[in-house]
Structure formats: structure tokens, C-alpha cells
Length: 230
Image 1 (spheres, helix red, strand yellow):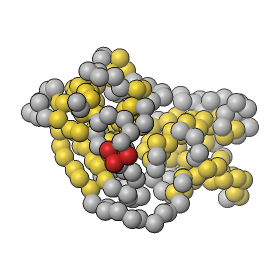
Image 2: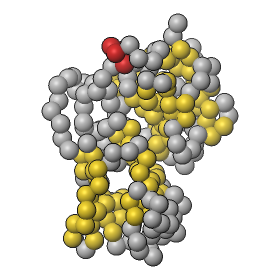
Image 3: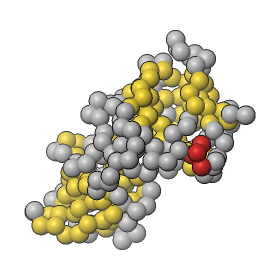
Image 4: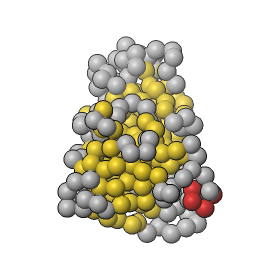
């Protein structure tokens, strides 16, 4: 499980386990992590966690958010990253777990996009964002298997079965989204990039959006249709 370690001037104030999918940070008392300081906006930032992966989003705060000393609007968190809000720091810590499966990555390029899938790995590559699969849904017999079919570019017509718990699509540093498989269906979440992915022409922002059959998703210039395997 991942956690945030809150500190100020080198003094650790508390440790906050990331037990919720969305944990807000800000000065107002309704936030999951309240930091009562005038340098912190009322609703400053949010950390979204999907399975073993977390990402930070600054909520247009007045004074901004730094990650490892650099301004960040959206950032895919890696073990040891330090989030700075005014004089306060939040260190992102991933507690290591034993690895029982393969750690080899499957990679494929679809329409210039980078798609990665892995089995039971807790490490993240610096050049790409991994998709983590602790448990295969197909083995559990949960939701029907989803498929995306590429609609444009040189790989038009190619299909990708969404067999993993998480599939990350896009171009790191440009635009990245995650499609997560849950017992009640498939959900897409915007992870990185100023441009938002779209579903049927409508931008995806904020909370995860559930995909419906025949939805057309566009990520980093590549359009794809979501379907359910019959």
C-alpha cells in the first residue's frame, strides 16, 4: 500500500495511507488531508490511486504545487517523489510487497501510442508508465472482456483485448490515460497532459468515467472504439 508522509522543516507530522481512490489536499476542513496554512488553497490538489498506481493533480491552486522541486499540474507518482505545498512536504512512499509473478513487460505501439501491460510488478520505468495486473479478471470471471479497436492511423482496424486490471494508453509527457477493469465495467481516467482525452467528443476530466459499448475514445490523437467481446 502507498502512503504520504507529511513533514515541515524536516519534522514528520503524520503518515497518511492512500486508502481511497481520490484523496483531496487543501486548507478547508472537508479535505481528506487538511493543511491549515494560508499558503495552501482551500482545495489545493488531489491524489488519485488506482490499484497500485497513484497520480497527483494540482487543482489550479494559487501558489501551485511542486514535485521534486519542479512545478507540476499532473504527475504520475513514483516511490520517493516529494510533493511540496508551501513549507509542507508530502513524500510518496510505496511499501514493497513480495513479487510472485512475472515481471516482464509487454509493449506495443498502436498508432504511435505506447501501451504497456505487466504482471505483478511494483516498479515503474522512467520512460513509460506501467499498467499493473495483480489479478486477472478473466480468471475470476467478473465483468465481460472489453476490447478497443483502433479507428485511425497506420494501425486502423487493430484490436486490443483489455485483459489486464489496468491498461495505460498514450504518450508519456504528452497525454496519458488509464483504462481500469472493475467488476462493474471499464473506467477511463485522465492521468497526464494538458490535453484531455475525450469520449464521443466530450473531454474526460476529474473522476473516472465508465465506458459504454461503442464509445469512441480519443487519446493523443488516436481514436478507438470500445466494445465488449461476445
